Length: 553
Image 1: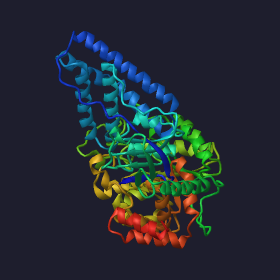
Image 2: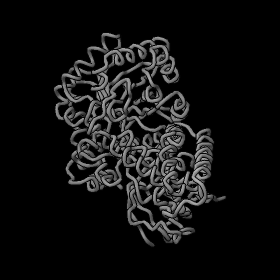
Image 3: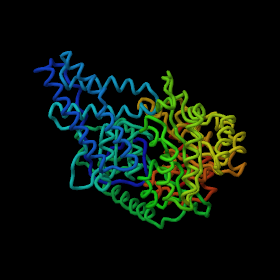
């Protein structure tokens, strides 16, 4: 038997045969253009249309996070600047395949330098490059293998368009060499409820492993290849226990001693509401509102915003819906919000800073949300993203209260806020911790950049100590402290977060069942002991190991 280690996503074991995804297309040769440039450009035009049609077909089958990823890819594939740039290279004598490759490579470099939102699209561009080149040359683009039986998929990495249309009934688990806990593969695996291992850097993704049996354990972060019959039997027994626990009654979240832990869903639009309802989410812990703004050339009207917000609020009568105001600005450029180019957009005019610089957009959104609340039965909690200090906190709360909101909080994503949480807590109604950005800013490591993915781990004691300071401040001031980042989807981390003082956890709907069943196994005292053990560790790996030891793993 051989074993490899990576970052685990989810809780459920997977046991099955391996199928290996074909490697990416190689870089095309710089051979001279054959035939006329006119014919080559026409061939390219047809290839782009073919790729666009294929992505739209996939889009029709997608939903939630997957739908958002594919929508972005369709827009990119149809971007005329990409076609025009490649056409210019063809006019210069470059063959179509090479022209597409070089053009998309240039765009990837540009996107990587434009901040988090565009950096997240680099993988999308690489996938579009693959698809257009395959269409131009008449070869099959590497994709998910077809199989009549369920399988464990091994890949160097997964293209967003492939991950977005996975069949959860066929794919038992995903295992990739690349990626981190906030990569597209990880996020979409969580949204589908598929266990995954990412960042398994020593994994052999040649076809040599196809057909071999493997056990994927996301809790330990291991894939075991060619296990013994005894190991398979033990894994099957453990899997049966996990399935039984996760399929239990959809009761409100709580620890074994009855301590309440709100289990909420992350949603991006009304399309995500049915999944949250099916999972028995106790409300919404993160309603992302960017979808309305990022697709508009002008700020949407109060009326248009209100109608869209009602589509989500109507699904949660009598429950809270926590709304994150527009999280855009320099890292998600909007001409009507912040048209100026910035050298370091991740540290620029983003989140609340951009809203404060555009007070009418801020007031319009708050007004639309208040009107939507009045026309539904949901309880709206509003929060501002990327708040950095006390002055910003007080300023935002004042504006929101003037407009009529009663529950006004702030997102804790910047270390400076966590460090003075005791000063800020008396002035707000709640904290909501965005662990993805909090980790990114703690380590000055782009959470979407593969080369520094090893830093993007909320298990690190440096991040846990910041979370504890927020939990302590919330407890001392009797305000709610919750987590809405990807960390809340990790069942073991969820227990630790409760031990740190976070009694509200928001996640992808498909993660709720696993988190619910894990929380029921421990009382508050045990959760606190696991949190203390993790805080006393010296790295993310040792912190997780220490917590798991306390919890009996």
